[in-house]
Length: 312
Image: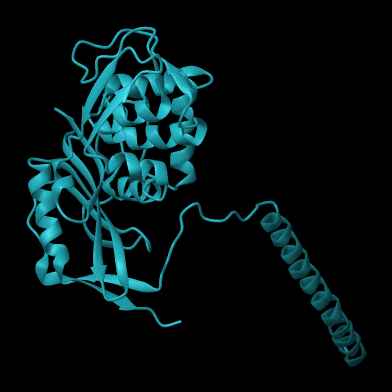
C-alpha cells in the first residue's frame, strides 16, 4: 500500500467517527423513549395502608420471649413496623381468623341495618341457633360471627352477597391482593378448609391493622357480651366473646381461631401509653399450644418497648 492509499484510508476512517457517534446516540435515545413508554403504561396507585413514621418502635432484644406458637408477629399498627417475629412468612391454616376478612368484605358492601336472610337451619354444632327464614340485621350477624365465632353467621353474610358465596370469596381474595397479603388465600368465608385456606402471621397482622381502622369492626371485636334480636323480634340470641384477654387493660380485640390442624390462633389488639402518647399494637400467634398464655408472655415483653423519634 502506497502513501496516497494510506492517506485516503485514514481520511475515510475519520469520516466514519461522527456517523458512528450519531448512530450510538440515536440508539440510546430510542431506548430511553421506549423505557418511558413502558413506565407510562402503569398507573401509580396510593398504598391502601396508612403509615405513620414519626415514631419507630424498638423492643429490648434481651426480652426475647419463649413461646409455644410456631408463628408469631408483633406489629406497630401505625407504622406497620414488625417489632418481634417468629416464622412471620410461614403459611398456616387461619381457622376462624378467616372471619376478619369476611367481616371487612361484608362491611364494604352492607349497611349496618341491611336485613340478611337465613337460608337454612343452623348446624347442630354452631354456637348460635339461627332458624331458616330468620331475618337478621347485618350488624347483628357481624356480632354473631366475631364474638362467639358463629360459622353460620359467616355463611349467611356470604350467601346474601350478590353472586352468593363464590362471588364473596372472590372479593375476599381481591381484598387480600389489594392489601398486599402475599401469603394469603381463601377458599371459603368460614375458615374450615385447612388444606386450602392459608395465611401468615405477618399477613394476619397487616389485615388486623387495616381492620382496626374501621370504626364498626373495632366496636364489634371490642365487645365482651351482646344480646341480639332478629328483625321480626321473635328470636333472641345471647353472644359471648371467646377472647378472654378482653378483661386485660388496653386489650380491645380481635379474634380467636381453632381447628385440630390449625391449632390455637389468637389475633390481639393492644393500646399502650408511650412518651409520644397512645400507641396501638397487633399481636398474632398461630399454631400455639396455649394462645392466651403465649399472648400474655408477649404482652409482658412489650412493657420494655420504646418509641424512638424519627428525624425529619
